[in-house]
Image (cartoon, rainbow over all chains, first blue to last red):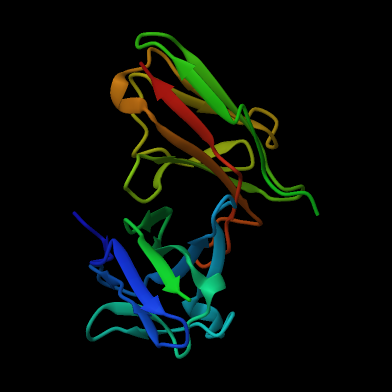
Length: 107
Length: 115
């Protein structure tokens, strides 16, 4: 069963435009939600997690339990935001990643 | 602090051969994970260790895959014999503990190509 869905494989926005990367999950209870990012030629790293309720590099993500979503947002995209973004869910001893969205910010 | 180390970075083998990957986690991290990432997909958790014990290996194809973490530090993942569909990047990650909200730190991965 697909537990984490990222509907967009590719997303392009212009520099300075708002960006939203979508993530939906299918799990009952209260899983932990994360966004991980992989910049070109770098290793996968944490961007932000639901439990911290923080803003990293201008990105925020709100957990909407009613819609089972954890969309990632940034009001003004920068060129350095171009990367692969993965939404992930932690539950019990399991950890599930979505298929990822490749974001390109056009100068 | 040093990050998660993995070796080799690349490996090419023929089907039915054996291969092993090595991972050294961040010092002090009790939990170690092995993931398989097939091209175009997200990482898939294969096995999770807490110190030298297996916490979860429900998605590990045990007929050909095995993993160990004998002294609770380094870990090896082995495939024997390899199949074409095993071609993927194998990622190792570690975390302080196994809490589901904990941050995982990833290694650079080993890219395996099975011909």
